[in-house]
Length: 243
Image (cartoon, rainbow, N blue to C red; front, side, top):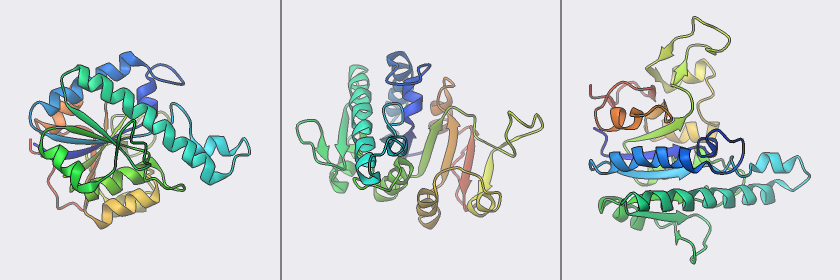
């Protein structure tokens, strides 16, 4: 069983079947699983993306300057974080949102020691606003926060079952890889996270786990039961799976 996890949720997952915005049915389904895991005692910190609302790089194509576009993207993550907080608290799970950009009327500013204290008290902490600086992705924010709160692993919750030996849509013989080392991932040029995020995890020996969050039970099966769900990227020495 994992004691403390940093869960990275993409904005696209929150959009559900929609191409834009929030799908409350999808959010409720994901939050029910997160709440179930939290009740078992697993300490959960989260970083949420904003791609369902706005992507900085997409706004750039409209002629908006990069730093400004990224700031707009960071604000989109706050909208998602507040939606997650509302649903989680209605499920009876105490939740705090901390933002890298101060907006005290909406959420707490990010303070590392306070975030850790929230986790120790059984509260879910959602980190919004990315790193607070342009030019960094929410994947990098997730890796940074995972290191700062000393998470056992960074769980990248996606729409795919994990990392495959090849693109399963193009190659029917592609197989799901349950374990792979950082160096093997680099050699095979697997696009797991952006370079900055991947480097942070490798340097701080934080295992990255990629799994399909839309498959019911996956979070509980991995985080609580220790089953081999998805793919784990590590040095090869850490043991995250326990079953």
